[in-house]
Image (tube, rainbow, N blue to C red; front, side, top):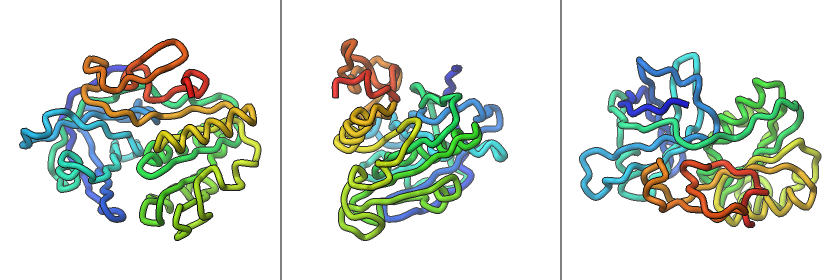
Length: 255
C-alpha cells in the first residue's frame, strides 16, 4: 500500500474522559477509504525540540462519508500532551498508513474483539469492517476504572459490548479474562492492549483452539524498521513490529 507524508487538517477535537482526546482529520488530496484496521500513523510533534521522534497513533476509525480519519490520543507524555492541545484547523504532519492490518476473514460469524485501555482504539474500526462484511462483532473492553473505557456508545452501535474494570466501577469486576463471554463460541478473537492482558487472552484462545490475532504496542520511533526499538521475538526470529506488525497471529509469537 502506498505511504504518504502529508499535513492533515484537523476538523474536530473531542475531549473524552480524563486525559483522552479524539482528533478527527482530513486531507483534500488523499482518500482514506484504503486505510485498514490495525494500521497506524506516525505524527511529527512540531515546535518541540525535546520530541523530535514521531509518535505512533493507531487509526481509531475512518468515516468515508467525510473522508475523516480518527486518532485517539492518551495524553501521558510531552509529545501526546502537545497533540492533545491541538485545535480544529491545525495541521498534523503525518506519515501513514504504516504497519499491517487485522485479517478480515471471508468466513462470516461471531468474532470477539478484546481491548484494554487505549488499546481499544483500533477495535472500533475493526468492528465496523467486520460488520460491513456480514459478521457479528462482539466487544469485550477492560480498564482499571470506568474512566478508562472510551467510546462505549459507538461500540454498542456495532455490536454487543461487555465491560470489565479492576475496581468494579463499571461492568464485571476484574480482568477481561474473568468475563463469561469468553465461554461463548467465536470464529476468531482479536485483541489489543497491555501485553500481560493480551498474553492472558492468547492463553484462553489457544486452550479453546480459537484463532487469535494480537496488535502489539511496542515502543516505536521511525515506523519504517530502521531504528530497531520495536523488535519483538517470534518463532522465526526477531522482527520489527512497525513493519512486520503491529498485528500478529498469536501462533507467530513466543508467548
